[in-house]
Length: 260
Image 1 (spheres, rainbow, N blue to C red):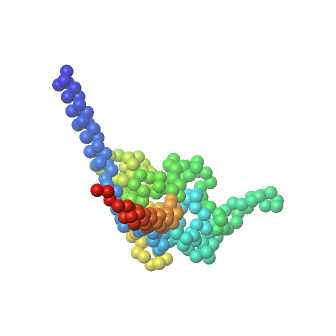
Image 2 (cartoon, rainbow, N blue to C red; image 1 turned 90 degrees about the vertical axis):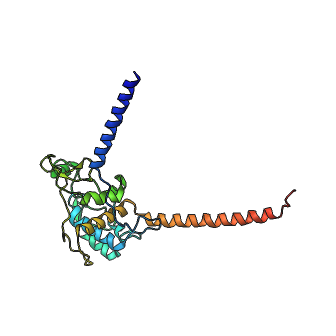
Image 3 (cartoon, helix red, strand yellow; image 1 turned 135 degrees about the vertical axis):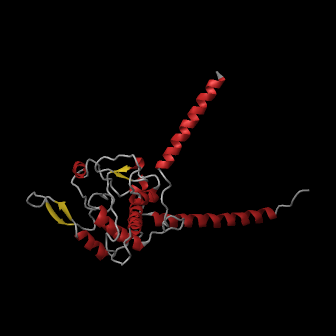
């Protein structure tokens, strides 16, 4: 009986070890890059944020929404920090449905700073029909919603490869070594010089992926820089307070004679 139990335990261990090995093979370590916002004193790279918005607008916005962002956020401190005039000009390039007017009818008008980012589809069903049944997720908080955060998004964007030998994919499905399950319905999006950066930065796939991921990281956590500053001030205050308490206690105890 004991030998039987040992055998069962051994088989279970081997099976679990094999499963973990296979899983590790399917999900390699995420790609790493130098994120300026990752450290304790981290800040967003303004130029990268502005380039990232350009990539989002020219590449991602035709399918993915960012429903929690308003055009005014583009000019706010801690973000891309476009000038107010630039943000107004960006908003005016989009049309929103408003109304009703005095005749009781809805009408379209250029977007204003107070408007949310224009949605690419009228509703979720239209989005699914336009994308082969797959719903393109909203990108507003995507970096926070995915395990691995910015590294995961960056890796998936660049993780397209030919499928392993023997693996069959359905029509409209692509192999991505970093995607959960390795299958994704979104085709590769970034190619060399796909966009022309206004600041003249070479638009390599890696650069575009880094810029748009930086933009998505900011949209998911727009108060990150403010939080870092608050944390630094709080720690500095606690250190100073600890030093003052230490010397105060030392002075108080120095007045008390040690009993022999």
